[in-house]
Length: 364
Ligand code: MRU
Image 1 (tube, rainbow, N blue to C red):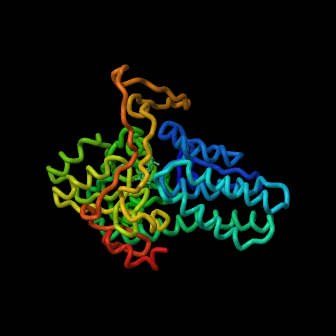
Image 2 (image 1 turned 90 degrees about the horizontal axis):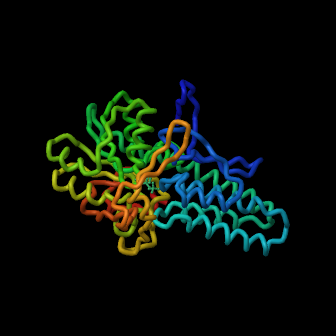
Image 3 (image 1 turned 30 degrees about the vertical axis):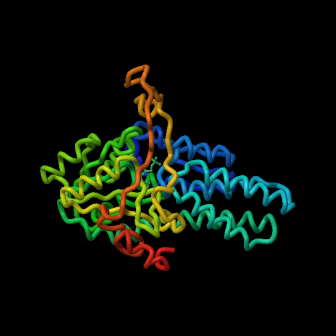
């Protein structure tokens, strides 16, 4: 995506890999929208920490980061003994896969890279294959987001008012985004929409990241408090909801996404507003057979008890906003059942959640 900072525009991907330096290059998302900065991780442990600390976040973006992190980790091996190399590969893969538990994209990305590495017979071959597979995962992610944008754009009419939750824009992927892809595609066809961004407490990805992206793209938008969506729906001010997802169960059509998505889906159903979820293929989990089995990340209570922001110079400040003696719960994701979802926008077309299994061959 094109990023303009102080009148200078440049194309960026959320995550890239520099093989010569063996560095994973990430946009430091915790500083946005106050400051645009990239960072380079030099070791795979640092890359895994960037995922868990949310320097990089969003299902597709952490998938690609995990894939590059695996390539980076195995690249650092300088010997030629396969036994030690395989041990290191396993350690790096596990570290990357477990950095955050809910999104399935890192696990799918790691599986793809490991499968590619299987076909090599020397350390050097396996290292080359790991880099190529990680690049392949990232490039596929971009192309799939493009395709789902083309399918989803037909849902948008000139003047459509769209609600989105959290950030499923290009910052949450390698480029383009999932929930935002149809909006960007519609814009390129001369169709303009207005987007309501749920602020998305506690980390405010909607208010900080989605709003920043939409402003960069010149898309009409307003930030709303999470609790305002029901009121706007009741007053006929929302025509369509599009969210992303962190894990969609291929067998049941259940959708895991940022906490608060389920609430919005219930509200949309009540007001007969279509509710769509946009995903690339790496967000589909073909193994789990029940949403109850999805690991829901519980993050630090501090995210609820405190608010924080960064100054223009990039200095991050944190303030207590809650009663000092109270504790908090902070489940970061929830599960929306298929009956509340109008359709899943995939690179292969728009499907009913329960149709995913039937179309598995087109979705893998
Ligand atoms: O905790 P995050 O910011 O990594 O959460 C992921 C998300 O941004 C959302 O759940 C998003 O809607 C799906 S990720 C494309």
